[in-house]
Amino acid sequence: MKYTFSIWLFFFYFYCFLGWVWETCYVSVLKAKWVNRGFMKGPFLPIYGSGAIVVLIFTLPFRTNIGLVFIVGMVSATILEYVTGATMERLFHVRYWDYSKQPFNINGHICLSSSLAWGIFSVILTRYGHTPIEWLALHANSNLLEVIVFVLTAYLSIDMAASVRAAIDLKEILISLEESSEEFRRLEKHFEVVSAFYGGEIKERSEAGLRKINSAIGSGKEIYDKLGESRRNYKASLVEKINEIRGKRESNYMDSLLARNPQAVSKMHEEAFSKYIELAREEEDDRI
Image (cartoon, rainbow, N blue to C red):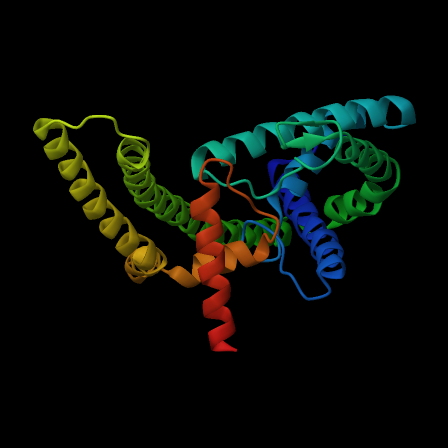
């Protein structure tokens, strides 16, 4: 059966919403608190909508063959999940879902249990779940359906644009914090080198040797004092830098994005990401 473009869009938005309901309920139960899941702020999860569309495209021609539906649906949706996850991490330097701790995972973007879930989902969707949604879309007033699709398209476009902007802003903060951390690590390395130089047994006794030792000790003390000051002010400088960047942007969008994705991680900027999360939690506690 052929669907119009508007019907395909309706299916996409419906399964985006259905995926949000499932994911939000599941994560909220795990966290024992309400979690509005998703990359977007509204009640839509595009990965589920995209997954449903991919599954339907590849499995509807043989929807009565459960085994084939399971395999094809599992493979197609898994490929989509991997490509989406890898692309988002490359663009935003953050993984908004991470399967690294799950067995049989590939780069943390997909894992065996997730793939099997996609296969089961494909069977349920193709054989049972899609039938009433299909009937609704085919029997709905075509003009009304197009209006609904148009409104949802406009809404999701605005929501997606704001979410992408927040993700890009967060990436810039992480890069900036990573550069500050790198400066601090270079300073520590200098301190270790100087300490190793004058901290061991010194055998030179000549006047030139003594001058060299005193110079090294003086440099070591200077670096030590500078390092100590940096250590004392390190967290404060990070907080100041974060707030400086956040002040120029809609920081509530970034905080909301991370709150919707409590399992998000950054393999590229682990230290900077943990510092940002720590600060965001401290600010939330202060508001409470």
